[in-house]
Every structure is written in C-alpha cells, then in structure tokens.
Image (cartoon, rainbow, N blue to C red; front, side):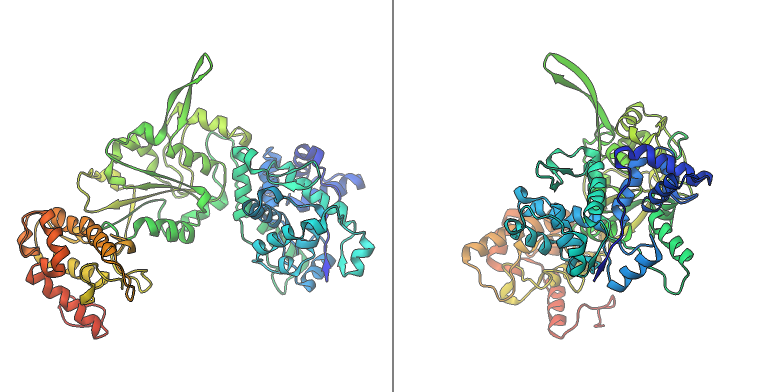
Length: 601
C-alpha cells in the first residue's frame, strides 16, 4: 500500500515574499490569527522547516529564499511528521522516498541514456516513482533501471494522466488530490531554475541552458544521500524536533557583517581527522594523488567530486595563475578588461556558495615557488578554532568577483578570508629535482601526511612480471622491494628513503601479466618502455654517483637498456641480484618480505 500527504498550495507564484513573511512570523512568535493565513503560514513552515530559532527560518528571514528551497529539494522525504496519521501510515507501508532528488536523479540519468527522451510527465512521476516499491521503499533504488524502464514504456504511456483518487484507491494508492499535489511539488522544481516544463508540460533538466548557479544547485541535490529516520520510542513532539533538526542540518547561517559566513554545520568540520591545510607527501609513484581523490576527499573530508578544484604547480607558475588576473576581452570594436579567476578564487567561490565541504587540490606543491605563488594568500593559511582564516586580506579583484558572482547571498565581501568549509590539500614528492624548498614559516601552517610506500594486498598489478625477466618469475613487487632495500643498504649521502621507487611508479601496461603470452614485438615494446622509465630513473637519479654499485657493466643509459633487452636482470650488479633473488625466494616460501635484520618474518 501507499499513503502520501502533501499540499496544494506552496504559494509558488510569490514564494520569495511568502517564505520571508512566514519566517518572520515564526521567529517573532506571532502567527496570524486569521485561520486561512494561519494555515498558509504553518504549511510553509512545515515544508520549508521555518521553526522558531531554526537555521532555515533565519535564512528565509534574511531573504535567502533560494537556499531554503534548495534545502527542501535535497531533504524533503516520506515519511515525515506532517501529521501523526500520515507518519504512521507511511511507516506502515515501508515508504522511504526523497521525491525531488529522485526525480532529478532520474532525469539526469535519462540525459545520459537518451537525451531526446530525457523528460518525465506527471503520470510517470506518480507511476514509476511514488507508486513503485522498487523506488519508494528502498533507500538506494536502482534508478538507472527505472530510467530505462520509463523510456522503454514511453509510447505506451504517452498522453496518460494520473488517475482520479478513487481509481488510485482501488489500487491501494491513497493520496487525496494526487494530481494537484504532485503538480505543486513539480512547481518547486521549476521555480528553482534547475528544471523546466516543455511544450508538452513534461519536466526536463535542460542541462545545456542551466546557469552556473543552477547547475551547482542541481548537483548539490543529485549528490545528497541522507535520510531522516524516526527515533524509536519517542513522543510526537520529540519526533517533530528530530525531523526539524535533520532539515536544519548543514544550512549555513549567513552573517551580513563583512565576510563572516560561518555556520554551526561548518564549525563541525573542525572535528575532522585532519587539519584544513594538508600536505600529502611521499616518494614518486606511491599513490598520493590516488589517495587524495579516492580516499581522503570522499571518505574523510566528505568532499564531493563537484566540490573540488585542482591545479598543478610548476616552475613558471605565478600568483596571477593561482589567484586570477585582469585580461582584455574584445567584443566587436569594444575592448573591456575582465577579471579571470584562478583556482584559488574558484575554490573560494564554491566554498562561499555552499555549506558543504570544498577542497582546493594543489598537485606538486614544491615544483613551484609556493611562497611566491601564494603571495598575500599566505596570510589566510592561519586558521582559528573554527577553521576560518584568523586574519583577512584586501584583494579588490577577488572581492569584486565574489560580490558579482554571489550577489544573491546578500553578503558584502569587503575583505577576503578562507571559510571553514574550504580545505586546501597539496601533494608533494620528496625526491624531485629542480624543486623549491618550503620555508619554515610556510610549512608551519600545514599538517603533513606521509603516504607509506608499501604494497597493499589488493594492489592491482604487484604480481605482474617484469618484461625481460618473466622467465625467472620476477614480479613488480619483488623488484620494487629489492630496489628500495638496496637503496637504504648503500648508505649513500646522495640516496635515501626519498629516492625509493613507488609502488605505482609504472602502470600495468609496462609489465606482463602472469599466464599471458605476448608476441616478441610486444615484448620488445614493453622492455623499451620499462627501460625508459625504471632503468632511466635508477641510472640518472638513484645510481647517479655510483653506477658500479648497481650495474655490472654499462657505460651509458643506452648501453644499459640495450644490455637489459639481451640479458634481463643480468645487467644488475651481483650485490643487487642477491637481494632480488632473496625476495623471489621468500615469495616461493610464502613469505612477503624480510624484516630489517634480513631474517624472515
């Protein structure tokens, strides 16, 4: 069975003024005495969570209506405590549905399946989303399958309308005035500007024509995954309070005094495992960038892929590349000068436009002159107890840009600060040549996290064979462990841990998968690729001042690679081959690697 309750009148035609007036009523504790007006205010109050002293009410009272509506679109769900009866019935049915974000996700998937058919009629929304167990009674429904089903049934369902309430009830679908109430919900989606009705009165995203703000809002809805769950064994007032807290969560409270846009939800970020300025470092190829993008950002800092900006430092990278610069723009015979934002400013804009975590990712931090590149932004890296910049700077270009882009927030950016929801995450190799040294004042403002250069059990190609050595069953793991142990054994002033080879220094395309036979031509290509990457690194970096310790007899890198194509591991010195054979033998015995004393663990 299905039981739903919504409303026929959210005052969409004058939503801005209606929500602001209703919010003021709740904040002042003076609800209208007129019964009709009182009902309207309470209706808006429930659906948009305008409870007294709540974040949504304060935002709406300050005129930030779009933020409140977006919050509704992300979070509104069934079941909800609009009435005790509707809550109990929805719970009894097993319904768990966030309708607006489900509609948007289906439309977005349709855009990727069949752009021409990427729309939903009110009938399809009712039949395939609200009255479908596979969607309305699952927290993680297979919306791709649903999208494909709707498109495949398009001809069959063309022109159909939502049945009358009596017909729906005969099918155990209880929703008084279902047509009108679904239509009212759809109006909120079109009001947001993220979707529109086409000439056939069907709902479309029309991604090609979304404004930048609408696109950002759309993806914020698409990526939101949380649900409210009714606390057990509590009274109705406690249930209502729990739901209100859920709806208020992560809605930032804007302070109109200069740049202060902090919120209680942003302040919660200070409980993160890591500080907000973080350098991830390690040997080349140890997996730093992979860790940042696939583990740190999504699982520890909770930054979605749409909420991070990436840049890479290099020797000629400058402050204007990082922050932005004014450039001429020619339109016909007119020349104007426009500020073009750099990665820092774009990340700052993202962070100021949402309460969600945002990250600025800087690859190769020390391959550019970081102190020079940051310039006066350096001052902002000092964070206070709420993880906002302790100090501020004046940068007219950034301020003018933010005031223009975020004018709908009602904030006057008279200075620049880094907000608490903006993380700055940098990666850094420890053994690159031609890198800049980070000075102590700069380093003091960062936390450093070293990525261990070790093979995980699920490493994708650690058991692949080395081309030219595969007849001896030497794997990538054997070779890397042997190289890295031998580097430390050399006790050379020019070598050390930072010269070790990373477990992802090369990819599987340079290796040979066990049990796979390759042609002599492909073998030659892999040997050349392997030599140009691994042997070149050993020759020019690791063994630069002591070739004899590593190689048996080679006068140049070309001679070394040519010799390797003929002799395989025979080009290495006897001392190195002993360590390589030790790892190979340990593997055959079922051991992983020796301990530091050289004995088996």
